[in-house]
View (cartoon, rainbow, N blue to C red):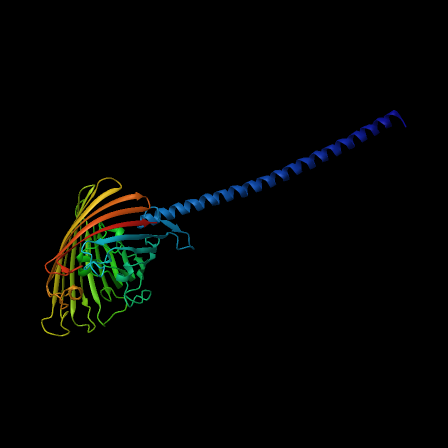
Length: 436
């Protein structure tokens, strides 16, 4: 073999090594690219999951803001439910009290009171739980249910509520309705079911009133709830009209074939001033013929930020309310109540209420008066007066304390005393409310 041949072989062998080296480098580079692609895919998946989590948080924040804008309370718990039910609001409170009557009635009962009837007794007034989905243009279908337990439910329940099967049951489905915001004009808000009345300056929930005890107007002059249909329509930015048809006063199942009609409006004509007026007419007796009329108006005024004033007036009339068909047995009642509340600090406030209620024919107080009067025969005409002072302090974000003094006065001896009856009674009360 010649040198030329040997040299060729070396070159040949060297060329083979070059070819093998190039192939190895190509394989390494390809494997690197595959590994990089795998890492890139995993990174994209992690980034997508992170974006999904951020989107869910953003949706939750939007739901919270939408619920508050639609009327939900700030800070209320929002229950996450299936699609279409986002924004459901849940809340409630526990309301307890102790009341002492200086008359020391032998039956330990304070007469002519709405809920604070028991003297020298600790009371669970209300344990309330509600679920609500406020309506909005984006979510036009909603609902609300209010379930209350305690001694207050003895007053609010009726024989036809379903849950409160008797008037002494300490459970009541106080409200339960479906709501629909119809896309008509400025938005027609419709409610179907059982809901609170349009009348009066006070509500059943003590924490939403300025005083612990309720007025005579609340107890004798006005209904608490209605079952039927009600419409709200905002004619102007500062004017809301209301109208409805219902079964009557404080009943679910109608006791006659007639229906009651309600009309009203609420307005804020100028800054710091509000005006609400309502009218209700319908047959409340079992025969369905004799009509009951009720007109109420409430004027509110805030001259300064810390001072709140209200003036409420009721007038009612009912035909044949006393005589079961006897001619001339009609009844009328009217009353006026003045309220004032002053916020001393962000946590401390003082409130007072002065009221006069006149039951000209015993149409509203006759039963109570007959049970408490010395003769047991009842009083045809009765005038009641009361003066109440309430001191409120927010002990904690979730605890409110109140102390109240109240004087009741009548033009007849209708208030029980340990020795008989007097024309007055004095009570003091301590109340604690824990909202959640």
